[in-house]
Image (cartoon, rainbow, N blue to C red; front, side, top):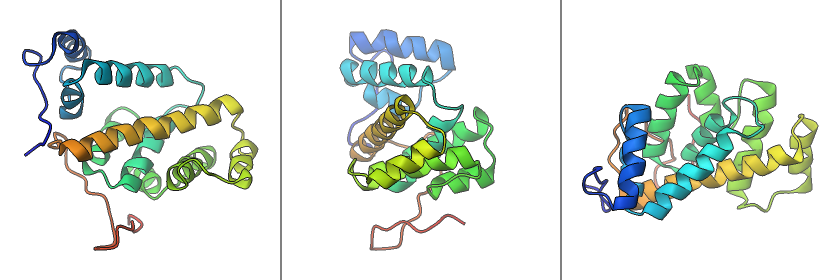
Length: 191
């Protein structure tokens, strides 16, 4: 049972109601995660604003989804991993091999590999990356604007992961569990 329950369009604060109605019109349905965010109109609007802005960024297509997969696995968030695997397959058309690579903090695409590895380093090091890690991203063909966008994708993915973990959001996608070494909190590679 969720600690912070998702709200329906009718139950949500007035400012969230119009956002939920717009999302439902655009998407056909609204996820439990977004309905949980809707408890706070400011949080929902902030998430949607940053997400929409990043969608207009200069990163190659589907890089944000790859990062979200890696960060959901890194953060151990089953809800976010389930939703991102679903969206990666349905909308980004990523195959199972690529999804597995992303969950393991890498990619089968050489350019995406650099972005995903950098994103995981940012999360693991909490932003305290080495100059060598940054230079590897630039050497792979990314520019400073794209480095900033990658950091924002890490922050956005982590924000959603943390909310879903705190809230205990019920998974409303086909369930995919993160992989961890039992008792240690350490992730094991996905087969």
